[in-house]
Amino acid sequence: MKNSQPLLSLLLGGFFACAVHAATIVSVTGPASSAPGLQSTQVDGVSFSLSQQFTNVTISVELLAIGAPLTGTAYLTDAIGSTATSANQIASASFDFPDGTNLGCFTDSPPCQMLDLFTGLTLPADTYYLTLVGPDLGPNGSFCCGWFATDSPTLVTASGVAIGSFFTTSSPASYAPASTFDSAPVFVYQVTNGSAEVPEPTLVIPSCLGMLGIYLVRRRRSSRRDT
Image (cartoon, rainbow, N blue to C red):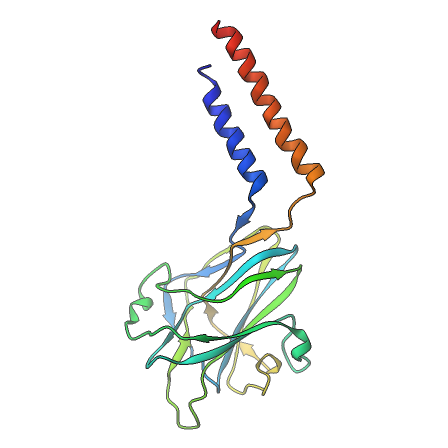
């Protein structure tokens, strides 16, 4: 039975693949080159498109703040621009900016700290827009916080997933996703821990049983040769 170990490893790997299908959906990372402002007078965002449904989705971004604690708001919608309304909203959440007093994030790669904005989402095939609004510092407020951007991005996507646009505005609407946006630098963010829709059992079970059958036949033949 000297030759059974490699086949057994392959079998176990195959069963693991049958049972678990989790991977990065979108990853935009890289050394931070700037941190465009993110407060009530400036709104930033990104978009991405999915060709299939993913579940258990986490969306994370790399932010900093000077003088934390400061709070912002994140929106996930299926539309932006003047026609967008709360009916287009998939999720929204408030978040606390991490303290960026130590600006090592400008040189560290991978990003020094990713902040989870949303977790446990189920996202059907569609185009999604993530829009972030920072704190209201009043008309005399100075720079307080930002979303890290990179000039040397590393882009990774799952199959059938597309990275869309990066956008910003300094004239936000009262409902931030309904703003008129301009193009922006490449913001650092990740959409991770997504599981694609599980294949039909009629497809998965025969495949796994077939692998088991191959292993058993090979094992029986190997045993006969050894005896």
